[in-house]
Amino acid sequence: MRARWLTNGLFAFGASVALSCAYAKEAPVPVRDELVRITQVLMDALPSGDKAAWEKWAADDAVTIDEFGWVAGKAETIASLRPFPAGISGSIEMRDPHAWLYGDTALLSVEEYERESYFGQSFVVRYRSLLTFVKQSGQWRLVGAQDVTIPTEPPPLDVPGLVPGDYAGTYRYAPDRAWTVSVDHGVLSYTTRAGGPVKTLQPVAKDVFMGTDDERNLFVFQRDSHGKIETLIERRKFNDLRLDREH
Image (cartoon, rainbow, N blue to C red; front, side):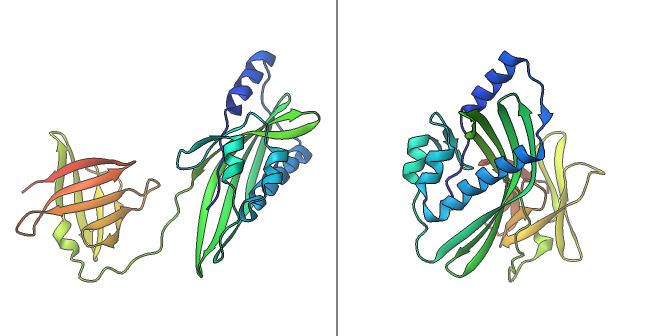
């Protein structure tokens, strides 16, 4: 939905600390609130595609990286701003802000709580953002903004015809490394070692599940030509860990 920011101003931040031998101290509340205000102005400008706000509050040498890894300079980022099309709307609320000062450089850690309406459907996405500001001509300018998506529990899906017992068993990926998949009252779960924590698997579709830990990886069970489960694939960070079922 949004154009997200991370800039190489982080390098400027590091240089500032190294040159001044500054130590972080918690920013006074007025400074923290000013950084939050600027960030809110920038986020409020996204739905309308307000380029002026970003021209004013972003440093000229800012470089952006969104949550998908897209990298752009200030000019490219501003050029990408467009008003949301009809049927799409949204807002971002600043939550839990914390700020620190390093001379004329400041860090702001804040949760950006996004609410989006997409053609009548409602979504919530939470980001944890770390923004870097430098004071230029008496005003704070954004030079860095790195964010990550906070994993949140998705709504449960009803998967007709699911037979949890099909998946129970031991799955091995190394001679001394195996996972155990089990069923308890119709709920599928797994452990990665004997006596380890039990982790629930949430059904997404037949033979496809999602982990319920912070990573929210996908678990894909593969069947042989006779319809029996023979392999478990854990898809993690766009890579697959293959585990073969023991018989």
